Image 1 (spheres, rainbow, N blue to C red):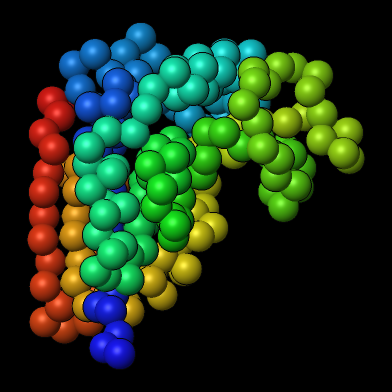
Image 2: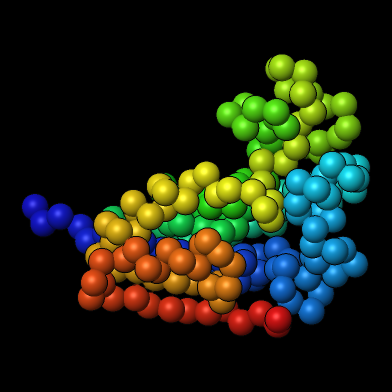
Length: 202
């Protein structure tokens, strides 16, 4: 039996926009009214944890009200013909809800929480995180999100996946956020790359 080709899909905010997930970079994006460092940095969390928790609590509530769109479902259909791995910059779970089996979240997952003192203590979380919500070691919980200025712990794994690709497909990202944008440097020579940018206003 012929082995299926390895297709790696790199997705960004544009693929989830049609589901109703606001993007960070469009005119009405989530950064509006907020300095990015106030709500998406360790410094912002230290300065005003209530603001940061509320920001992500609102996003989590929104995520639980939306559904995967046609683009998510089309990627699931690809699994019939190809060995598909998805590397996503998105923190939503829409790929998984659509049925994709192999998804790596570069920037964390909104429906998880983790300890502020031990990044290995990660919990499923579909409710608000509030001040006083503690991990098993009595440390405050925070969103399981990679904030600006923090390392991307799954980046090396993403490199391994992309280096093994027979085909790379880029969907819904302008490739402006690093280090995610640098992943294309690790693809094997002459591997075809298909780019579908779902436009969002910058």
